[in-house]
Length: 166
Image (cartoon, rainbow, N blue to C red):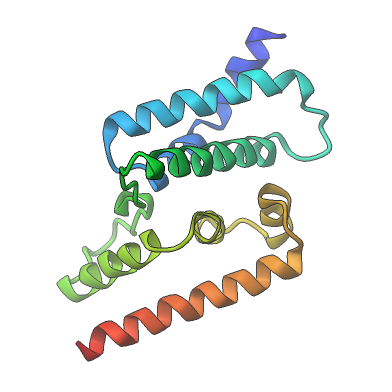
């Protein structure tokens, strides 16, 4: 195992790892635990990386799979881990008005209620990852990715409409 290679790829992809941790854990201690799990899994697997996909795709896949497993394990313990609103960084130009901020807060509340796989798909989609790469990371076909994204969007839109009626 080449330690310098490991350190370099972690450094180059640390923002991706942080984004996954922040998306699945709101508690700082849980984020640290999840980050450690992800780094351990990358360390264990880096010797088997064969270069068939980009290293960032490979790391994303490990990070998401680790986060989903972590989420399921914590859910069995009765601890709720939800998506954190800090994942989205809004433009630094004009501060959004209160209605816009409220809509973003509701959006992330609705995303936090999605199944783990759907959260992972929408996270990648919101990060402007191509369908082909999402397919590779998640392990489903591109057409399934497109279908899931459309269904998730519809589900989120329906939740927004229902919340307006209340």
